[in-house]
Amino acid sequence: MLITAEKIRHPLVSRWCGLGCKNQAGNVSVFFGLAAVPLFAAMGFAVDYGSSSRARSQLQAALDAATLAAVADSASHEDPAAQTGQRLEADLARLGLAAKTTVSSDASGKVTVVAEMEKPTLFLNLIGEKTVKIRAMSSAVSGAGGPMDLAIAFDTTGSMAGAKLANAQQAASDLVDLVFKLPNSSTPNPNVRVGLVPFDFHVNVGTQYRGAAWMSVPPDYTDSGNACWPVYARLAVPAHVTASCDGTQDCSYDDYNDYAHQTGTYCYTHTWEGCVGSQSDPTDSLIPASAANTVPGLLDTWCSAPLQRLTNDPAALKASIASFTAQNETYIAPGLLWGWRVLSDDPAGPFHDGGPKAATNKRLILMTDGANTHSASYPDHNGTDTAAANTKLLQVCDKVKADGIQVYTIAFEVTDSTIIDVLTQCSSGPPFFYNAHTIADLTGAFHNIGAELTRPRLTN
Picture 1: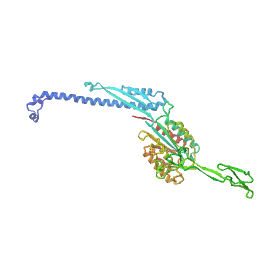
Picture 2: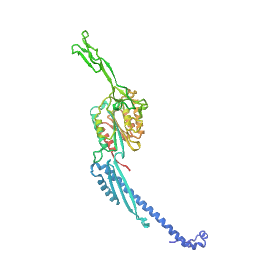
Picture 3: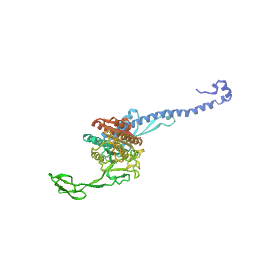
Picture 4: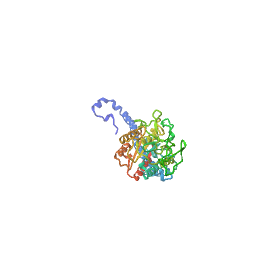
């Protein structure tokens, strides 16, 4: 119905309009007609835009589901791209969408899907826009969705001897296999690196770092003593004893006392086997080590196997794990500290091998089977203050987590409620703490962590 001035009867409007309104009736009709065109186009755009947005959301959801499923299933399929294409085709048909899709995968196991479609318009078709182009892309990968550095701080104290150590070594080796596994490939995942820090109440950094600027190791030295120990005359009495530093030494026989007394010398060399103590408090809970604040090397100290810096070589890692032996007592904080140092990219650190924080997913696993029995006595760890040792462990834990590293803790056959509480607090939250009461629980803990680390993730 056309509204003109002649149909307006309100007196105020009539007074305002006057006689000129009657002459402008045609102009009003033209005005409303012209205004209706953009108004109609805007309404049509809103309807068609909403429809295309819904279609794009459906398309993106279908792509995400297909790529995640492809990565999850890729170990059992020879051609993940073909499997993804078939799955996606079925999903799109169910949604009533027709799209052209391209599926690809790369050496790291990442699957990428790109889909393009043209959706017919309803209203914009009237002004010449017959279709709206829609494009979506999805990528997924197994694991962290990018570079991942993992350190394992592994308790090798005497209480781990026997089946406990053997099974823990197997669980850690299985974890190494899992995190490096690429679908349908024998090549290790290039996005993953792993480091190892076995510990007892010291950590062994390796004797190759004796001359490093951040190390301070006293020189080896030799001292001497008696070469001939007392031997009863009724037994064989040596005429001579060979000592390592002074050659042949005479041992005399005392007929009155009926034993050979000690007239020779023996030699003992004091050496460094790679074991380190602690810098002074509070730097013993920080990454930096330098010529101005060195890590003390301890002579005549035997400890765990040497740590393994970050590497992409699963065989080297598994060989290192196999070399672990059980000995000594427990001081956990240094094990965690050196695990952090292994992961760090801080140039002030001993190694700074870790990837850049912004681009690298960093994880640390701490496994121990007991409470702290030693504490720092600076530079050694011969103290027995358990409370101080627990406090130091929590200090290191807090700093590791503040550095953006996700911490998993495993208590293996631990009955001490205090250290269980400390390990729970040390983790990145309750889901990241495992209380392994049995060997089966420990194996399950490592498996669950590996499954979480390798879970398929969207990367875009």
